[in-house]
Image (cartoon, rainbow, N blue to C red; front, side, top):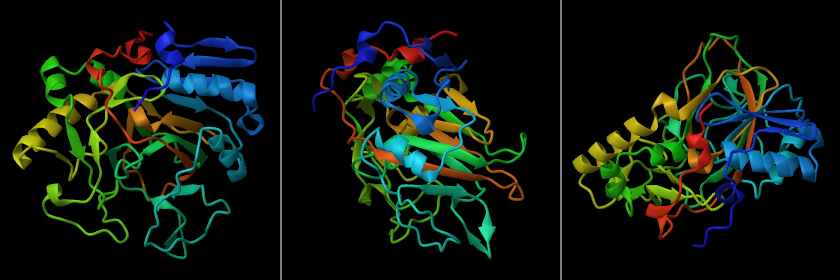
Length: 321
């Protein structure tokens, strides 16, 4: 697969500062930038070009104070590519959104039925749709109602470019050319998916094989691609060897210095590049209402470039703030 030419590889410094009325402020973390002066409801071609450039540079973007309808969210996401529709769930929901591209993420229940998915329990570290051959690309989450500060429900992210670039050389050599079989049966709440059949031995699952070292088609840089931890297996290993290797990779990749924790406010819109990040959410007080609307676009089938070992690091992981 040919990697597209990329301004990230050609640009010596991560974009920051002001472009007209739009300001790009890198977050004091290993990833992320806040975008100011941009109303996503009025996103034109120029605004999108700036947004997309910043998205590739920073992996995650925060735009505060947005008042987005579902139609507005769909219009923004459409600029990033083809939509990835959410999987069918078995649980009956209390209401349906007008736009099928929108996923409701909520713990609120009406008449005993949830209005959305994921509830108020822990959501483990993951990248979206790693259980599919083509994973998710851009993911966008808009906060309509959030618990009071201190009640939990923050979202943590990790920069998987930085995780790869700082991986010990001995582990880099072990995983170059290696692939992981990704489990399809369980979701990020550790629940069996609708229509899925569980298997005791993850090597016998029917999930896709993805490379551990994933070369980004736009930036041309490498990241670790781990998907989720439970019920995954490194192909060609015994279960004991696989567990030991995956445990070492996950322990490294989830270190706080590679990440950013977002404390939500109403009106926040966060969009991130699922292809080179992982994220999770902690459990929170079920009495605190949380209502988020999400949408996502299709990414690509992960691949490792033939010259992956010689690829330069992504600049955002190297940025010192």
